[in-house]
Image (cartoon, rainbow, N blue to C red; front, top):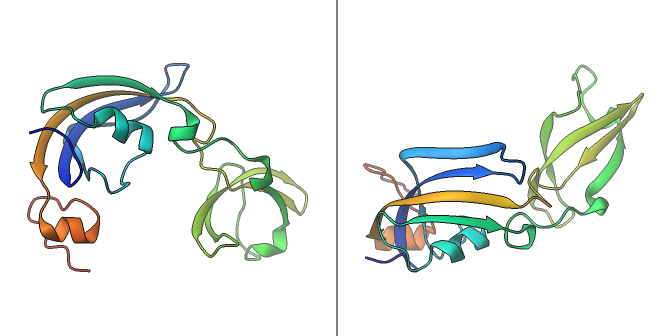
Length: 161
Protein backbone atom coordinates (compact mmCIF):
# COMPACT_ATOMS: atom_id res chain seq x y z
CA UNK A 1 0.00 0.00 0.00
CA UNK A 2 1.19 3.51 -0.81
CA UNK A 3 0.75 6.60 1.32
CA UNK A 4 -2.16 8.59 -0.09
CA UNK A 5 -5.14 10.60 1.15
CA UNK A 6 -7.20 8.77 3.77
CA UNK A 7 -4.46 6.38 4.82
CA UNK A 8 -3.25 6.13 8.40
CA UNK A 9 0.52 6.28 8.38
CA UNK A 10 2.83 5.24 11.21
CA UNK A 11 6.34 6.70 11.09
CA UNK A 12 9.50 6.89 13.15
CA UNK A 13 11.28 10.20 12.72
CA UNK A 14 14.07 12.42 13.94
CA UNK A 15 13.73 16.18 13.45
CA UNK A 16 16.84 18.37 13.51
CA UNK A 17 17.62 22.00 12.75
CA UNK A 18 20.41 23.13 10.41
CA UNK A 19 22.94 22.88 13.28
CA UNK A 20 22.10 19.20 13.74
CA UNK A 21 20.37 19.75 17.09
CA UNK A 22 17.59 17.21 17.68
CA UNK A 23 14.31 19.10 18.05
CA UNK A 24 11.95 16.13 18.25
CA UNK A 25 11.83 12.42 17.62
CA UNK A 26 9.40 9.55 17.66
CA UNK A 27 10.45 5.92 17.73
CA UNK A 28 8.95 2.43 18.03
CA UNK A 29 5.90 3.24 15.90
CA UNK A 30 4.52 5.73 18.41
CA UNK A 31 3.50 8.40 15.86
CA UNK A 32 0.64 7.95 13.41
CA UNK A 33 -1.42 10.44 11.47
CA UNK A 34 -4.18 10.63 8.85
CA UNK A 35 -2.56 11.50 5.52
CA UNK A 36 -4.27 14.30 3.61
CA UNK A 37 -6.00 15.77 6.68
CA UNK A 38 -3.37 18.45 7.46
CA UNK A 39 -2.33 16.56 10.62
CA UNK A 40 1.36 17.19 9.89
CA UNK A 41 3.21 20.08 8.23
CA UNK A 42 2.65 20.34 4.47
CA UNK A 43 6.30 19.84 3.43
CA UNK A 44 6.61 16.55 5.29
CA UNK A 45 3.24 15.32 4.06
CA UNK A 46 4.28 16.04 0.44
CA UNK A 47 7.59 14.19 0.92
CA UNK A 48 5.78 11.10 2.24
CA UNK A 49 3.11 10.99 -0.49
CA UNK A 50 3.41 7.76 -2.49
CA UNK A 51 5.92 6.08 -0.14
CA UNK A 52 5.45 2.50 1.08
CA UNK A 53 6.14 0.68 4.36
CA UNK A 54 9.88 0.42 5.15
CA UNK A 55 10.75 3.38 2.88
CA UNK A 56 13.19 5.85 4.41
CA UNK A 57 13.06 9.53 3.57
CA UNK A 58 15.34 12.44 4.40
CA UNK A 59 13.84 15.82 3.63
CA UNK A 60 14.51 19.45 4.48
CA UNK A 61 11.28 21.36 4.87
CA UNK A 62 11.66 25.14 4.45
CA UNK A 63 9.71 27.47 6.75
CA UNK A 64 7.15 28.19 4.01
CA UNK A 65 6.11 24.49 4.10
CA UNK A 66 6.61 24.12 7.86
CA UNK A 67 5.63 26.61 10.55
CA UNK A 68 5.99 29.73 8.39
CA UNK A 69 8.46 32.57 8.38
CA UNK A 70 9.03 34.57 11.55
CA UNK A 71 6.77 37.61 11.68
CA UNK A 72 8.04 40.51 13.80
CA UNK A 73 4.44 41.77 14.02
CA UNK A 74 3.84 38.77 16.32
CA UNK A 75 6.15 40.36 18.94
CA UNK A 76 4.27 42.47 21.45
CA UNK A 77 5.07 44.23 24.70
CA UNK A 78 2.35 43.91 27.29
CA UNK A 79 1.99 45.09 30.87
CA UNK A 80 2.65 42.74 33.78
CA UNK A 81 -0.90 43.49 35.01
CA UNK A 82 -2.16 41.30 32.10
CA UNK A 83 -1.11 38.38 34.31
CA UNK A 84 -2.32 37.46 37.79
CA UNK A 85 -0.74 39.47 40.63
CA UNK A 86 0.90 36.40 42.17
CA UNK A 87 1.96 34.78 38.90
CA UNK A 88 5.68 34.37 38.38
CA UNK A 89 6.69 35.34 34.84
CA UNK A 90 10.05 34.31 33.37
CA UNK A 91 11.55 34.34 29.86
CA UNK A 92 10.81 31.08 28.05
CA UNK A 93 7.43 30.55 29.73
CA UNK A 94 4.57 29.78 27.37
CA UNK A 95 0.90 30.69 27.69
CA UNK A 96 -2.24 30.15 25.66
CA UNK A 97 -3.82 33.32 24.33
CA UNK A 98 -6.56 34.21 21.88
CA UNK A 99 -5.61 35.72 18.52
CA UNK A 100 -7.58 38.66 17.11
CA UNK A 101 -9.31 36.08 14.86
CA UNK A 102 -10.41 34.12 17.95
CA UNK A 103 -7.98 31.22 17.48
CA UNK A 104 -6.06 29.80 20.42
CA UNK A 105 -2.34 30.39 20.08
CA UNK A 106 0.75 29.83 22.18
CA UNK A 107 2.76 32.88 23.15
CA UNK A 108 6.27 32.74 24.57
CA UNK A 109 7.72 35.27 27.01
CA UNK A 110 10.97 36.50 25.46
CA UNK A 111 11.98 39.44 27.65
CA UNK A 112 11.04 41.21 30.88
CA UNK A 113 11.91 44.84 31.55
CA UNK A 114 10.27 46.00 34.78
CA UNK A 115 6.51 45.85 34.18
CA UNK A 116 6.97 45.46 30.40
CA UNK A 117 6.81 41.86 29.22
CA UNK A 118 7.68 41.02 25.61
CA UNK A 119 5.81 38.04 24.17
CA UNK A 120 6.22 36.28 20.84
CA UNK A 121 3.21 34.75 19.07
CA UNK A 122 5.33 33.02 16.41
CA UNK A 123 5.48 29.24 16.53
CA UNK A 124 8.81 28.32 18.20
CA UNK A 125 9.91 26.68 14.92
CA UNK A 126 8.83 29.57 12.65
CA UNK A 127 11.65 30.57 10.30
CA UNK A 128 13.52 27.29 10.88
CA UNK A 129 14.47 24.73 8.24
CA UNK A 130 13.17 21.38 9.49
CA UNK A 131 15.33 18.37 8.63
CA UNK A 132 13.44 15.10 8.90
CA UNK A 133 14.83 11.57 8.76
CA UNK A 134 11.77 9.35 8.50
CA UNK A 135 11.13 5.62 8.28
CA UNK A 136 7.65 4.53 7.21
CA UNK A 137 6.60 1.83 9.66
CA UNK A 138 3.04 1.03 8.57
CA UNK A 139 0.26 2.18 6.26
CA UNK A 140 -3.40 1.19 6.44
CA UNK A 141 -6.69 2.42 5.07
CA UNK A 142 -8.39 4.88 7.40
CA UNK A 143 -11.75 3.94 8.86
CA UNK A 144 -14.79 6.01 7.93
CA UNK A 145 -14.85 7.34 11.51
CA UNK A 146 -11.20 8.48 11.27
CA UNK A 147 -11.94 10.24 7.99
CA UNK A 148 -14.99 11.95 9.53
CA UNK A 149 -13.01 12.98 12.63
CA UNK A 150 -10.03 14.16 10.55
CA UNK A 151 -7.39 12.22 12.52
CA UNK A 152 -6.09 8.72 13.17
CA UNK A 153 -7.32 6.67 16.10
CA UNK A 154 -4.88 4.48 17.96
CA UNK A 155 -5.41 0.79 18.74
CA UNK A 156 -8.44 0.29 20.98
CA UNK A 157 -9.32 3.98 20.66
CA UNK A 158 -13.09 4.39 20.65
CA UNK A 159 -12.87 8.11 20.01
CA UNK A 160 -16.30 9.66 20.41
CA UNK A 161 -16.62 13.33 19.57
